Amino acid sequence: MWCLCVAALLIICITHWVYRWRNPRFNGKLPPGSMGLPLLGETLQFFSSNTTHDIPPFIKLRMEKYGPIFRTNLVGRPVVVSTDPSLNHFIFQQEGQLFQSWYPDTFTEIFGRQNVGSLHGFMYKYLKNMVLHLFGPESLKKMLSEVEQTVFATLQQWSFRESVELKEATAKMIFDLTAKKLIGYDSAKSSENLRENFVAFIQGLISFPLDIPGTAYHKCLQGRKKAMKMLKNKLQERRARPREQQSDFFDYVVEELQKEGTILTEDIALDLMFVLLFASFETTSLALTCAIKFLVDNPLVLKGLEEEHEAIIKQREDPNSGVTWKEYKSMTFTFQFISETVRLANIVPGIFRKALREINFKGYTIPAGWTVMVCPPAVHLNPAIYKDPLSINPWRWDGVETNGASKNFMAFGGGMRFCVGTEFTKVQMAVFLHCLVTKFRWRPIKGGNILRTPGLQFPDGFHVQIIEKDQKMQKPGRCKGMNMVVS
Image 1: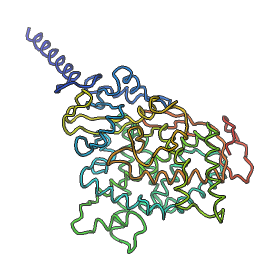
Image 2 (image 1 turned 135 degrees about the vertical axis):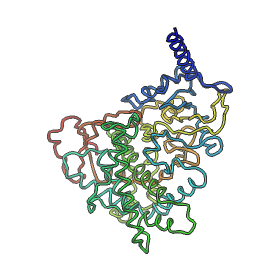
Image 3 (image 1 turned 180 degrees about the horizontal axis):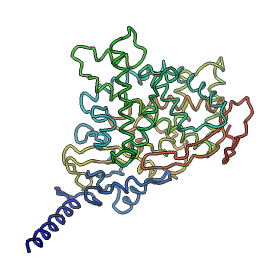
């Protein structure tokens, strides 16, 4: 008899727990939605893959069912998902007041507990100013010629190959350039392959957080561990033998660490370096790969780019001189194309914040402590905002300011956490496009298909043949597929 009582009590407890999971306590009216399965929530559905540029099915289906603001549960946390431009803008504007930056515990493990994205208040502003020392306009003006030389030399190297996988090749180019400016790292002279650790890291970054040998997440953590060890060794070497003049960001960091009363610690500095190395090359290489794919599919856009950059060269006294800052700032159509590329690519599928106190918006209550996920793709691909949103149309940006964020454009974040590396990304993309369309042609060979899980990937790569314009296009060898020459 007592066994039946225990079993009945257990069933009641489980039923009550499941009910509380699905109907959390709150004041007011929660956004509609489902909390999914206990503990797991709707995590598996969120990570399910899709192969389109459209709004992720997980988001789109729930928008159709519940509206632009709905609730769910991801990785054991209650989440309010916002596809509403007004709420998104409100969240960004209330950073530090009603909301603060938040990442899942798994992200914190990956990026480090002292990473810039997880810090707040004065410390965040302090690190942001440090980053602007590297990526601010004055530094980028000095860096412009080096970026151009690196891009042109790289494109020339590619032109001797039968095929180049763009995502991997552009990632290596950008990583080598950024690592040199950050820590003085030269892959050609180093016995250690720093980027190899980041490749392992990236493969598991947006994956199910299962830390078991063999899983992508486990490999991700191991990649971080090895990369951090290399960065720590390099920083300690630099601190032991500081240089009189700054030649890279590490020199600046060492100076900050040596200042009396500094709030910078070695752990914070290393996490900052790690995040900067990752953010600077992975997202930009994805954007560049998407950009070239869009140009292959849209000859009119390519023509517009060629006309703009050929006009820049014609206006020079010396056609062979490098890109000037004035010329860079004049690349209006190029910036429109970059904005259109990142709008459609949606490299960042979600931006997370945490509610610091209970918030009421449009009749719904967001409880204190809950996570809010701003969903850029749902805004960028909204047909009520962008006509024919799945088409690439740089001309839609005529007369539109794209240097910052807005309610309808948040490819680089928003509010006080607007990405400080945005201008550096634009410099690299604009200079790459300038060199490519004025000096080279290319032929798509194979690949170019995308996969979102929910982050953007090119599972088969995007293989192209590059050649200088004054040489003949070679046959693509054994590679079969697209044969269109883009010039």
